[in-house]
Image 1 (cartoon, rainbow, N blue to C red):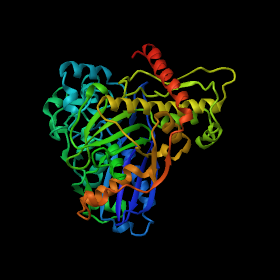
Image 2: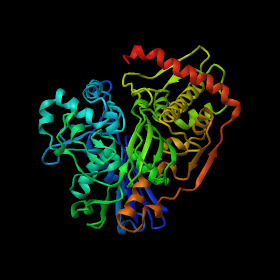
Image 3: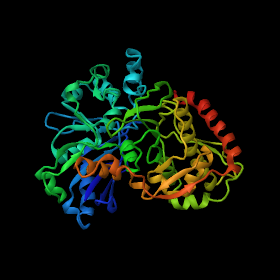
Image 4: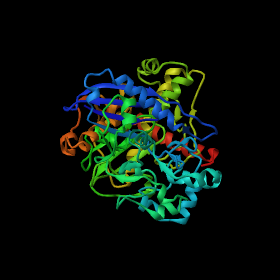
Length: 483
């Protein structure tokens, strides 16, 4: 058996697979976000560990769990976990969807104009490095006490194995990694008020990075000494979960955030497009990724705001959309690709006295689809075109949402079976390689396609018109948000 653990934003998810890569059991434990100020997003690192223990307690009843041979880790990228010399957190982790470091990003770009070519993308507030520069100015006392900085999944590695290490793909999202050489960059550290000595050891995602300690083994109900794979950031681990490790393999990820991801055989930065060019979690591979802060979470927000379950909202919205469906900007936490705008916020436009909840749900679905149209066009500007991408993530459960995205993009989508398990499943696959039981080629097969979503040509004009209006609405409202 092999265990994959994914440290998400809204939940920790875990999956247990056997030697044939069949999913034997799954578990999840919820997480909460804290927002002490507008635009801030934080979590307590120890909450991740408690959630991991809750997941493994659920999995412990599965046959063969105690004989697990290796553990793989995946997680939300970019989070700044700042630790003292005793490995205890100095403050809550600052997450990927936090927007406080926008001034620091501008300063870093001014001081190092070629920073995007080295780091794979222009500075954005969600990345780890700008947060450290922000901390140096906003809380110099805490900054002075830092002895280790790591990413969310690697805090779990610390609990499991007692070491500070990370893989190339998660390191890629920090803005400290020289993507071409796959090494920490002293220059990128210097421009972000970061001591290179704080950074974890670098390994490939397929390489063992620590072994389960006796203390952690007792807590998880597993054998001490089993290897912990380097693992991957959630996007790269999700790619491993569907076998997207060869040049041109592409997929959409519909989680709290959204990504349009394409594997590349070489490092191909195009920072002016705000497409991320990062190291992959497997050796000698990179990827280009359009990253949107607001994925399927916009639908979750609408369910909460309208006090209705998502399934009920989707059922109401299933009939053909009315002609007067309003527009919705889904930028509840700012946006990265294609705007790099931490200030923009969500909005409905075009409401009338006749607008009902179903029409507003349709507006939310359309908006999610249009962000993927923006992602597609950003990748095209970076020289990459995609065809028939796969789909993973919790948002992939909705047939209506996937059909809307296929219609708006004019692209066939392929939903894989067990699409929700993507990053955790990919982490489990990485653990098989780290244990020496499989090669990347052995495990990197695409799962079974659950359903194909083909664009409906009759909707093309509607979406083309609404997409143009959607983009115009952003340009009109951005100045009001300070962007």
